[in-house]
Image (cartoon, rainbow, N blue to C red; front, top):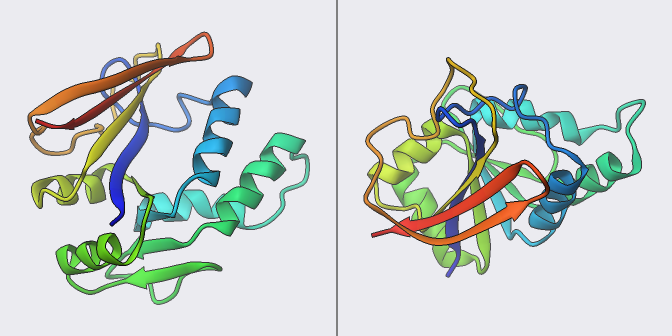
Length: 176
């Protein structure tokens, strides 16, 4: 049975904004290895549209960016949307009941399925379907924007912490 993990970058003030928290080379290497180890990724529409950047080679990419893109393209992706009519390569559209779809994914797969996108994760949190939360805390204050937790934060127990590079700490929590 798969483990559903919500993992996302967050500022010190709880905001998720990929533009405010670009990874340094050490963190980017961590993300490459993380994606390689996933069974797949579960996205909401907005986050999927941001991540589609990795679908096609971009001029000026360095070797690490090409490596990340290759790893990202190789993993199955499930996109939860009621508005998209289709999705890109190696992706499947999930337009049915969210709870049933995620329970099916958990039952049909092994390993880690990573969730990205605070609104989707908030819905899955409310349904009790997130098995683990990985918060990559960056030393910035974003001020405004979407929060890591879009609804009430569940009761959580800290199970691990890890410094990644000089600036980021990954906090790993499980529901208490």
